[in-house]
Image (cartoon, rainbow, N blue to C red; front, side, top):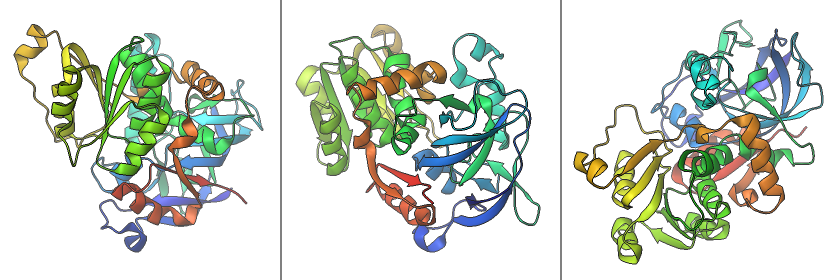
Length: 376
């Protein structure tokens, strides 16, 4: 079939993106689903910093590529061997396809799936296929097994989680990355206890999801740190008890002045200097969780003695250490019960043709989550 998609042909184009147009909206050819694969009509796709980090070249990927990884849609066709999904099912995508057989998958850590990571690096589906092609026949790569910025996509069945059809699909998209990563970091990676104290550095979609996850998990004190007043206001709306504008105050000094550090800190910026601050704000015996993805060349160092003498813990959290088929339905149930105010993440809805200007808004911090809606 033919479909429209936002294709990245070249990384590191200059800003503003509204002028340089790194994402080209073009008609592409999409192959039928093969064995174990599913054709999905896209409904909603969120713009995330993980997409931006490929556009600006800080997380290089193979080119050309249909971008996007946080999404929801409706199943339209299933390939041979697909039994758990059928046409008209509503689905959310997992940006790591889960093979179910490697050691991480077999030991309950599917976010670290080895064949899934290899496929994502190669820009293919789990099978190794690239279903997208240009009109001239050139193969086009998949972003994180999803390729969400397209009107239709074909993905491995292992990339899909069936959801409650009553959930609005524009909201459902946010569960595929922001909510799964942020809330998952709280409940899966950190496993915070009720009454804990928490600090969240960086209040994009993932950071705000971490704040709301900490509130739902029973944290007593939640510091939210950012540079932008709008994001600090949103943090208050989703559960923060204290906000700190890091352009005006030293967050580490302020946190230590108020309560001598916190039990858990979360760094969701992807910046090694901010991670250093998060570690410094963690109290003796506490845990520092890093969620953001810094440039691969950046290094992070800590006083080695503090790990022993203060019993500190530093943990990475990828995709919220999630088991998507377990976690997404329960996070959706928490949203439906009023425990996760996910709608507060959405800055606006946009159309596919507005995507380059929307990435300008994401890059400057004037938007949290913009969601493409694929309305006909």
